[in-house]
Image (cartoon, rainbow, N blue to C red; front, side, top):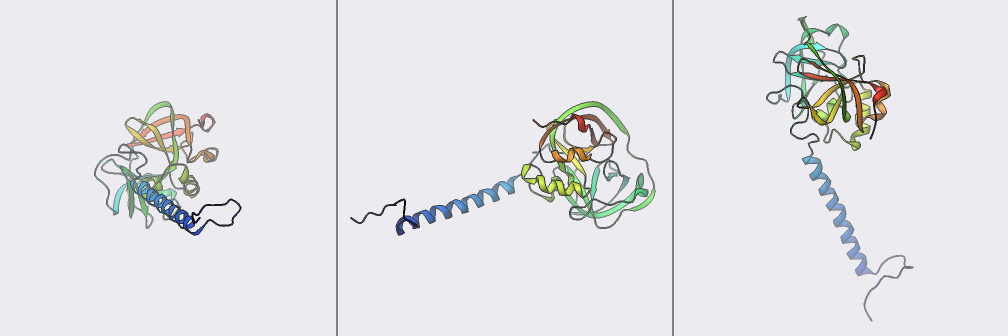
Length: 243
């Protein structure tokens, strides 16, 4: 009788069965790798309405931009066309802009990260101040409860695919520790926007007490406001909840 079969106490299966199992295992490995590549290439976390740094055509890959610089909660260049652009540094570092540039019209150079309408200018040098400027007007929108995910503005703007989700949590934590802008990607659009700059209740950067919630689905209460064409959510850490 020449039929091969597996005996449980044997250290290895018969040759023909072993070859079959090796082919199946190899096929599964290659299949999962191909699936992961396909999902990663197709990922666009927020869909077509993801984010809200103004409107208009795509930004160039590298650029020189001028506008009014504001530093709180994070550095933003409010361009003359009304389109605000987040400012960041190379790697997992913030822009490191001197306090004296706050409220100044400045010219900044660097390369652009962009996903949908989210844009970040990654600086290759500090912005050059030209003259005093007028910060964009602030319009208070009242107190809101918003559910979404705390992310960093650089990866979400296209530096990483995906730049959101639980798998990106460790990266986002490092980016935000490096003082890159914190953003909230909302589960449902607010004023037609799914993105807002995230601040503490005093209008400053993300509070330390919210850092354990980075990359998680979280419900938060706070004051919402327009700063020019940029939505800013001043979250109250005491009211933050995970589902």
